[in-house]
Length: 443
Image (cartoon, rainbow, N blue to C red; front, side):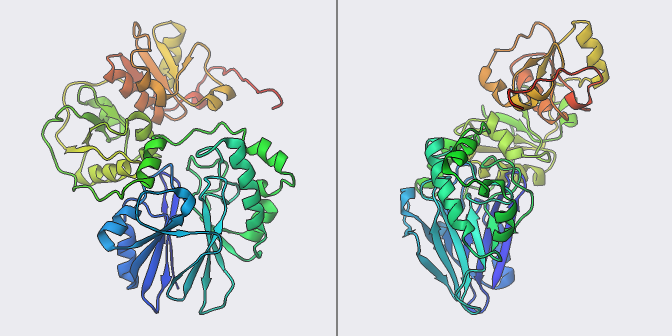
């Protein structure tokens, strides 16, 4: 049997190559848009990818099923409730899809989305019982999927409760390989572990401990987790006509009116950048998600990078979240503008003297846990949408936890003409003064 898990650390997504080594055929489950990784592994294993199985219509990343169908002639399988516009073979509960001696048995498990299916994998050369489960966005390692991205949260939660109970009836030894690990916005509290077993999750997974559907719904439907950026557009792309590969990224001179996304590190950006450029370092965590929070789906983007390799990694990340209008990249040293970062120690003095306005650009739950007195709160991801909503009569210092989001926020403000200075050497957690603690009722 051929089995390989692929992890996108930035998005927290998992996808799978599963096949029959003797028959030299395989399927890909929940592929990313960058299908080259699967083709390389298939060539190495000497198998041909003939099918794509989708557990559901993804809301956080662009699928590669279109590229597989258009470039390789692969058949796509997805549940009929997805109501997709492309040619496919629909599956229903109990459907069995054979790839050589490997059989994928569909288990309809609605909750995250109405069409969601898990795939129990059977190797008929060993027996007729499943020995692993591709659980998609239902059962995670240590948690369960969120129910509020496709339908009303309480309705989704009720469906998810019954789906999880069904999965928990599988034998203890069945290995579970989820569609997401830690870092994804499609669930909270999940582990960074890549796999688990039904027995382990039945014993330790909090989501499987609820005996009452009412209690489960009350708990899971009340989540306030962020929705994936660009979600409606990504769902539209994944349900609609097949999305083909884009032209290779080319080097350009000038931007032609495109938004400049500078993907170099924050220190390099501060030392010199093009007028109006936004800075999201491609080598930082969750690059694609952060970029998608700032950029609109139909916005033409020109990448400023330190190397071609860096530009191509950025392009892959942007395309993974449905940002397809890429005008090209530039390696020319950017001239024009710069800003001076502020140290944590320096900020304490500036704030006491009333010389600056300080924006805490973390999320609300972080702010609730403690903040610096005298600071204002605006999450970095909404700053650009606010336009000129920030008072720029004083220099504005941006601060987060470690400096990463503060740098992004400062670039957004600078692009809007604000004198912005990020704290890059720390954040609220390293603030030398006293933070104010807030606790929610019942906490």
